Amino acid sequence: MPTWQQLRDVKLSQYRHAADGWGKVSHRADAARLRVDREMTIPVRSTQKGETATKAAGDLDRLSRNYQYVHGECGLVRTTLEALAADLEGPQRKLRQALEDAEALKFTVNGDGSVTYPAPASTDGTSSPVLPGPYAPGAGGGTARAGALVPFLPGWGEGGSSANKAMAEDIAERIASAVREASGIDARYAPVLRALKAPAGLDVSDDILVDAAKDMRAVRKTVGDFLNDKGIPRGKSPAENREWWSNLTDEQRDEYATLHPAEIGALDGLPSEVRDTSNRLVLAETRALLSQQYERLRPEPPQYVQVGDPPSAVVNPLWQQWHKSGGERLRAQLKGMQAIQDRLDASGVPGRNGEPGLPQAYLLGFDTKGDGHAIIANGNPDTADHTAVFVPGTGSKLEDAGGDIRRMTDTWRQTQQMAPGKATSTITWIGYDAPQNLVTDSPRPSYAYGAAPKLNSFLDGLRAAEGSDAVCLPSHHTTVVAHSYGTTVVGAAAKEHHIAADDIVVAGSPGMLVGDASDLGVGKDHVWSEAAGDDPVPYIGRPFLAGDKWGVHYFHGIPYKAGHISTIPSDEAFGGHRMDVDTSGHSDYWDEGSTSAQNQARVIVGQYTLVKEDE
Image 1 (cartoon, one colour):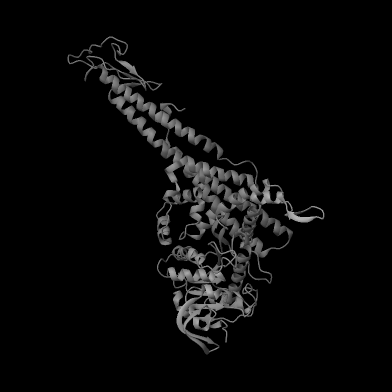
Image 2: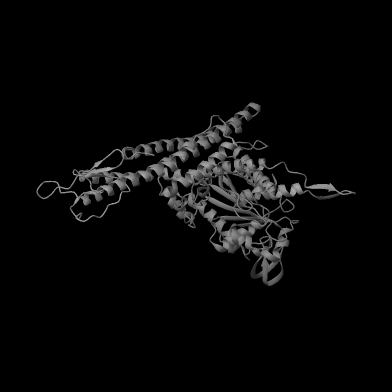
């Protein structure tokens, strides 16, 4: 327990100075991680081959993770010290005011916090008489302690000995109260600060990451209102989010990013660099925690066992218990997280045919809510000349993120062949709860209407992050690419809000809930569709997800139905451009080297005249 002298003398500026030091270390660690990733790892992967190069890249990945851990932990130390100094200001101010009052009254504050006071002087210059009794202060005054009661005795009125005694007791109580308050603060912060230390070694293990997540929760609880998530915008537009971020000091930004990384990483409108740093921290700690939980479960038992005579297959009770304990869900989430990490670690890796190495990946969103969500960018969309946002359809979820990520990495490579001098960013947006069952869920537009505000917010956020809140910059071109039910999401988004895109490309669309390409808000000349002849989804989805209009249905220019018609993007009556397709089925529109994939890439880089259209 601190003494009042320690509370009086403590220099809170030293805590803040120390916090600044830890903040600088945190900031430098994050900058070092970026340098390792971009200036060391990417060149190694893109230019070197062989066992030595693979080992070097692995060592650099480990160094990057170490820097990421240092960034987070040092940031927590900084925030804790800042909050400690802020919390101690109150009791120190209270104490100093009490000491000033004692000095003004010529009282003496003793080492134990008691206050000695003199007897009041009489009008003739002598001491006033003191009444006898157990509460009398004595001929020379007395000593008051916190918690003492001021008695009422006849003759002890204003100007008598009781006045000094009462004031002394008040000062003593204020001193004790300040010390008690400081003691409580000390007891709250001390164990948290002691826990913020790294073990020996050069490898950040799952145990260390899980411990770091515990540290974060402990710091949040300890600092309380000093920096809680109530200060983070809720329900605001991306432009307002960006303005809030811009108005913070560098120190406040660092504190929010390390103490509330999930909230900052999910905030549309913030710079991609900021979201990526925060989401990488969330991914690493979440993955470590779920890995430990999965490892604590016994290995998955066989789902079926043979029982009876003759034997027959029945569900294994041990498997049922394993499944009930969350084994299958944990495995699925870890699969998706591994796919994300694989892409983060693949920056710089060249293509199979000597294509340029992949650009830096940016993790713009991540969580495990529902079926799980992830937003991964190839290249920085804030500085790109061309950006493509891919919206997947039915069945998309965190578990299967690998396939959707791969589609956009392949698309990025395609755009580099077509526009090698331009910076392009291709983004996989698994940012909504997609229907998971083709028969029972996909015919329902409710999933699309639920996802529309999220997609619009993300697209508006890209625009806000690259510096223009009203219109796209002349040099910046954004294309939304959607597949299957994802096209329905885009249609709902366009109905809800002016979509922040220059072009819309849809593949295998079951319907977009609008009847004409002009209803999508980008102009029918900037709407492009692909539909393979044997893709069943456009035919299956039409009765449920098509849009309505008054018009004429054509088949290769020949009218066959007029009046109130329902249309999907592959219909001539829908308008826009119908691109040539040389792939088959519902999921092959991104086959490497196909005309289908090349057409999409031509639109993404704005080479409209080179797009091959259906004749």
